[in-house]
Length: 299
Image 1 (spheres, rainbow, N blue to C red):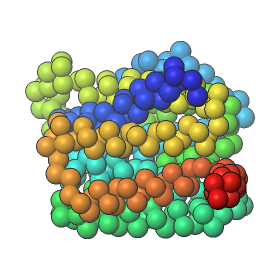
Image 2 (tube, rainbow, N blue to C red):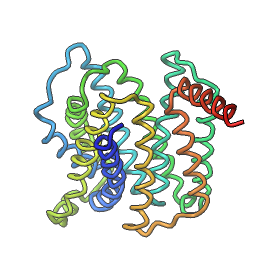
Image 3 (spheres, rainbow, N blue to C red):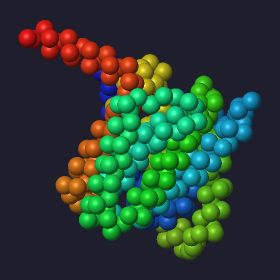
Image 4 (cartoon, one colour):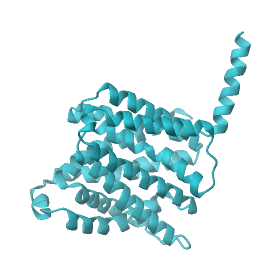
């Protein structure tokens, strides 16, 4: 990977990491469901030029839009708003990677290597350790919401195999179209005081849903889609593991989050597990053979 593409990967990590700050601040300001609806409203305005039919793929596309737009994002922002700290939420969202591997094995018949089985167990153990951190333990509902969000994303990831060449911006456009009215309806049902919330909001308060839409969806996903067109998934995906680390740092800087040793240990275990799942088994075998050969030469 050349230096320009590496810097783009760093930018994607930065905007995704800071999205947790915007999400937590926005969910507190507007309420989680209303914030998510505003986020997708802004995204829809930007993505309108890409809102075109996808012949032959409309039904699976609409199902993915519901899972990601309504399910995943609403649960993630509810989790952010539920309390605890940003680090635990940002790290737990990474469970979508092992969840995806499990679902691919069940529904697509993909084989899970021994390394990936161990990796999935490591990632899940890491989240369990995070849950025993005193700060997180008092807000376990946040972890369960975020685990649900990760599972929703994993299901949507498997379903997106049906239209691999749709294009990230067209997908974002349809997600925004489906999510905006759906989330607004859910907000009207489960949340209250919308008039007061919107009336008391200043123009500058709308930076949070605007950033989440433009920064995370347009810039972040756009960069990753660009990189995936030039490098393999096993190269790009591990680079994105910096995002939850940056989110943890931002949580300390902007929300004075407390990072205990259990959260650090659990976070490291989870990210190691996700890394092991992300890299193709054949690459691990190749690296292992190279390491053995190098060790033999050194003797």
